[in-house]
Structures are given as C-alpha cells and as structure tokens.
Length: 503
Image 1 (tube, rainbow, N blue to C red):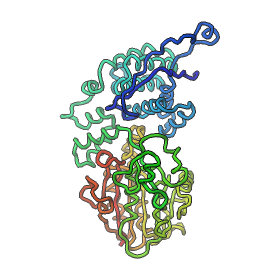
Image 2: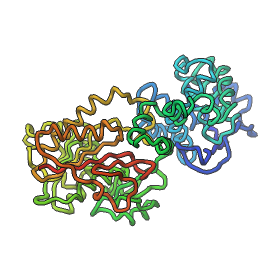
Image 3: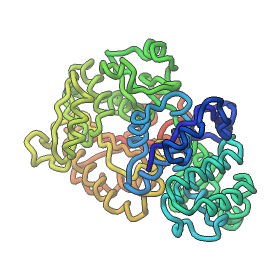
Image 4: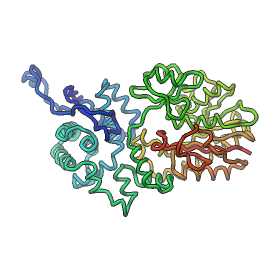
C-alpha cells in the first residue's frame, strides 16, 4: 500500500462533550480537498498512477487500531511510534490520537451499530474494512466532523485497505449517519428497567461482566456505576510525581505549565504535550504516575511503625513507578528499598526508574521469600505488594484492555495475588507493615484475595485502617479498613489499598 497523502487543508474538531480520545474545543471540520492552481495537472497525473487520497492522521489512526486487533498490540506503545514515524505533531497528532483511543473505547457500541447498519455481524466483515468502518462510525457519532467528510474520508480509507468494498462502506456509513449516538442506543440497547447491566454495557461500551463487577464493588448503585462508566470513556489527564527531595511539586507545576494535584502531596497535573520530552523526567526529578498510585505507595510510607524502619520491600516492582517514589522517600529517611521483579525486561526498567536512589533491584520471583537468601523471612519493616491484576481500574488509560480481559483471567490471577501477599506477610518482621495494592475494583481481586491470603499466610496479621493514611478531606473512602479509589470520585485510577500489620 502506498503512503497516504496528508490533506493539509482539511481541518477537524472534536465535539467538546463527546471527545474522550482527543482535545476539546470547536474547530472547522474536515472537508473535501479543493483544487489548487498549478497543482495536480495532467502532466503529473500522466507520470504517476492515481492513488487513493487518505489523509495522514486518519491513516495513522487506522494503522494503530488495526495493529491492536491484528497483532494484540498496545495502543499506548504503537501509536506514539507511528506518530514519530510519520512526523505528525500538533493538531494532526491530536486528531490521530482522538480517533485511535476514542474508537478503541467505543468498540463494543460501534460494533453493535455497524452490525445493524450492515445487516451482518461485524465478525463477517473483512478485518481491514471493519477497522476502517469503526473509525468512520466513531467520527459520525462522537466528533464534529461533518457527515459527508466522515463518510467520504472513510470510503477513501476503505479503497486503500479493502479492495472492492467502497460501495458497501458507503452504504453502511450512510445508514450509521441516519441516527445520532443516543438514538442508536435507544434502538439497540435492552431496556434499563428490565436489563440494566445489558443497557449500560451497550450504552457505555463495556463488556457486561465488567459492568456487573463495577456495580457490585459500588454496592449495587447503578447511578454511580453509570458515572464510573462515563468517566472510563473520558480521556484521562497525565499525572506526574515530583520525587521527594528532588523536586518541589509547586515548582515543577510552574516548570511544566501544569497544576499541583488535588490529593497526593507529590502530584502534578500536566495540561498537555509529551511528558517524555520534559527535562524533569530525563533528569530523574519526576516520573509519570497516576495520582492514585502515588497515594497508595505513600500510604505505606506514612503508616505509623514502632521499632526499626530501615528495610523496605517492593515485592512486584515493575515497571518501577512506585519503587521510584518509595526509593525517594527512603532516601530522605535513611532507609533502603529492595525492589523485586520476576520479568527480566521489567527489572531493567525498575533499575532505570530508580537510578541514583537507595534501591537494590532483584530479578527474582517474589514468592521465593524464605528461599532466596536476599529475601529472608521476618526481615522487612515495610512491604508493598502491587499485585498483578486484571487492570480493570485503568481502563480509561488502556482502552483495548476492556475487550481483552475475560472472567476466566481471574482464577490464576487471584491465586497469584494470594501467594504474593502471603509471601509479603512472611517477609515482614513482627510489627512490620504490608500494603496490598491492585489496580482493580473487582471484589474477588480485592476483599476476597486479601482476606483469604491473610487467613492462609501462616503468620498472624491484623488489618490497619487505611483511611487515615490518605490525605485529610478525601471524599468517598468508605467504611474502612481498606480503601477503594475511583476515577469518578477521586480523578484517579481505581486503586485498591489494604494495610496489614504482622503480629
């Protein structure tokens, strides 16, 4: 396939109230490319065969979405590489980003609409054409791109990636354009009164089992569940962590043009741009980290502790964000952190993230406590278990994850979580503290896992009320002793925290 042409004269604008994947504000919409004097004459056409005119931002978005579905790629990895490769910046990069992430978030609803509009299941549509139609339907239903521009540009894209399907694509997209998003939901979703989970799943593009797990974790409150689903479909802000002793949060906010965080004493909200280009990150004064992750790591560090406080342990350290914060805090208090990571690649990332800090990185399995001589039992004063989990608490940041996770993922994960927490409790000295953290609100990964692990650990342990370990005035922390953070309540990922003290 030949490289698509950039349509420099085409402009586009996401609708302010429906642009979870891109920037806000009104802008002119993409349109047809006008004729330009002195360009595109017959002599040039005679020298080179005609090729489909697909604008570059849309083509980049298509490549990213196709890679996610074809290669099981991760959007947060493949899209930046494509933007660099095609040298897209500014509004072009923002539009490609909006289309990619917005389409991936809304796949479930878009597929239901395309199935109805096409008169056949989307699984029967050729994959390249299917991904192009998804991008087109997203533009029609969730942006201010005019219908004629969304249809024509998508037909151009189908012409480039799916031979012979342009008539089909044109007919399907015109059918999609006949209703707005709310009207499609009204037509296709089951009635809320008879099937609230099914209705919410289609209306807000989440698998039903995830909607059900969110509702259960929220005590069956479907109104609050709806607010969570809406927040999951919004574009999340970038949070920085100003490393204690290395950066002042207020000064860092001024330096990067951001704002201090609402809750974490180290958080800075970044207003835009590429965080990887910031000098503070290159110099190790800060790192990218969701404010919720900062809060749960800091909770372990500030929890009252009697006796020695020199040996800290991060039992599942990769890729190193929490180790970076804990390492910086340990440096201020004369402590040393041991960071354990079972993956060799992620262990290297932890080493890079903690360079210059009092951190020892071990490439080993955290469950080898008591077997590995560098992980003795009863030795550590503070232990963090940031356990591998389904990641349901970070779906707004990883839009493709909601479609990849399955209920069948839970049994092996919860078994691993229990084993790691049991190892952490053995690693803690009598009187030492263990913080169990997951980026998931699923009750099986949170309350069930921590209760079962504490019961089976073979060492006595008592729960510590985690609420006082978070900043005063934080709303919606529940009844304790554990804490569940939420995107719609706190603006963070849905982090779970339980703190235990070994007897």
